[in-house]
Image (cartoon, rainbow, N blue to C red; front, side, top):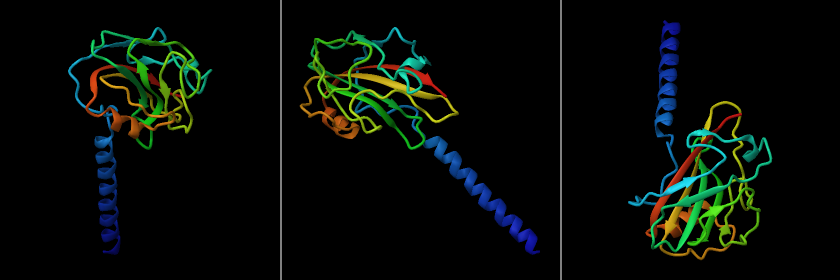
Length: 192
């Protein structure tokens, strides 16, 4: 009798554990949340990799860990500045920010390979704090196992944010709210 009760109790506990894992999987974000819905989509590209293709090791912690070259076009005419956010929504603890650049002037439509890890870029733009705790780009560095997706997003804004260097993701997204006039997205994948 005790064995049957214990067995039933173990089965119930295992069922709840499996349910918790399943619910957690369902709640895992498929992509970083955009600050708002935008009507205008424009193009973001890199010669380093195609959309949904593997990011070369050169741009990761397994290589030189330099930023890939990026360029964008077709953005709205009323753009005043751009914001670049690079994130991994598949990180074990939730969305992991790899790069934040804001107040990129409207006449700048590319970032060359290997953007220096400085607070203010020579061409304009201010760099924020990534989730490695550093200014500038920090490339993909996932734990061994599953493939992760890396969302490169450029937002066109109708203002400059005026934030100082080292702002975090939450601060940048809050400052962007209500000012996004366009968005471009490129996704790369990487695993170790």
